[in-house]
Length: 122
Image (cartoon, rainbow, N blue to C red; front, side, top):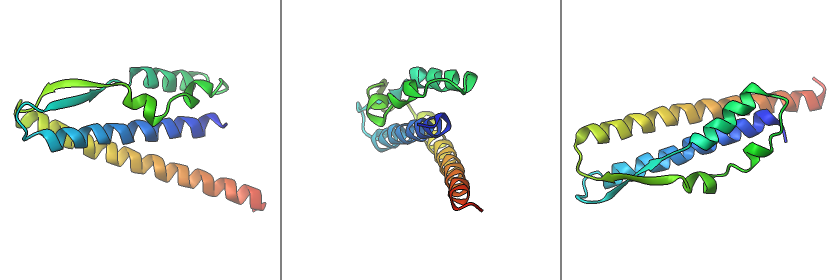
């Protein structure tokens, strides 16, 4: 597998899971005592940084990162009812991740278009 494609796939998965966590927290924000979630993706980010430092490296470390393994790193942030600043932070994060997801998807689409042109010999 191509390292660049694997890195983009992992980044898309990271953004997807972050958006899921933010959406869950937004939905639970008004429920007193509800448990809010926090994701720790330090391992995945370290793998992406390692791949960036060594582009000729083995994409195997990235292949092991899936949405399921990322969801395993979701823990408790605490209870809902901490105030509107937490809700504002979650909405801002959701918007940021949404923009990043669209940018990654657009870049991936362009890469596939270039590959298609190369295969067609144009």
